[in-house]
Image 1 (cartoon, rainbow, N blue to C red):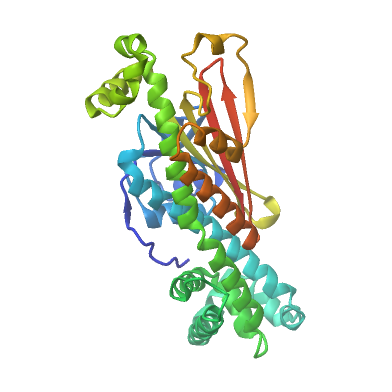
Image 2 (image 1 turned 120 degrees about the vertical axis):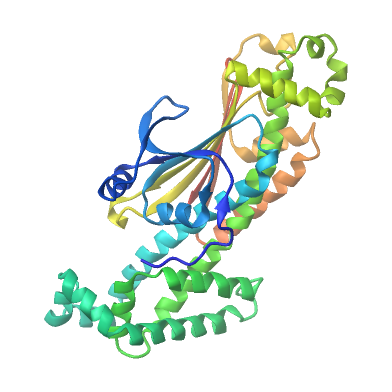
Length: 381
């Protein structure tokens, strides 16, 4: 299988990569060493605990639907903003490419002119015999190469039309990545189809290029929200500091001091209080294991809303409240104007997803008993 080179080659971001059964089988068959890992929910699984990874490797695992989830435990995320953006981009790229491969083949075989070719006994034999398929791909490699070039040219022409994409050059780059990642047998099917069959394939490429184009927006929404969550985390950690408890009026000044934040981080690490970011993948059996949903959950100490958990009045009648991310950001914006930026990113991303045929949803659990917030964003591709 061929995959285009990612934008950034290395992601310097320590994380745990939990494998599903398909990923475990892949690694066992190739004698790749695995480790026993335990997630924040206590579940154990096999996988990798890497201080860094290649973006290409991460994308490959997502495209192959080998991961059940990725987890990051940190006391702060602001110092890893760039690698976090790179990881988010690779995750969405991989998920979109996986769905594209499935959708391209589905659309090709559903076309009447293509279906007539596939019921031919000699053609059907190619796809039931791996040796015959390999030989056919080898003998028609030049034709398939020309076909990829034709599709790329067709995509470039349609991507440049007014109103199709905001940035035609970026759209062309994404189209090229999708065409490089297209299944060889899909390209073989297209090469056997009658002339003029590239139209549906071109539209599929353009559609999924639009979905890939949302990766940057998702990454920016995530990192901006994490910055809001970090403020809540540090306020929660400050409740354990004797001086901060005695002088709450000095808390804004203290939190602006790097030395004070470092002291809070060290104390929180000793107690095991960490922020946890989890990226989960879900797929459908009917779609050959390609991930259909990505869920990004952030769990942090502190309640990200207007309620001051240090106020004795709020400690009465504690409960578990649920809301969505938009409502939470609106609440946070009343006390923190910086939340307005995250709210704008949220609205923009939700609208962009709807425009590309994707579904974006969110949920938030505010656990007053644990003084903990868990916010989840879900993207259905």
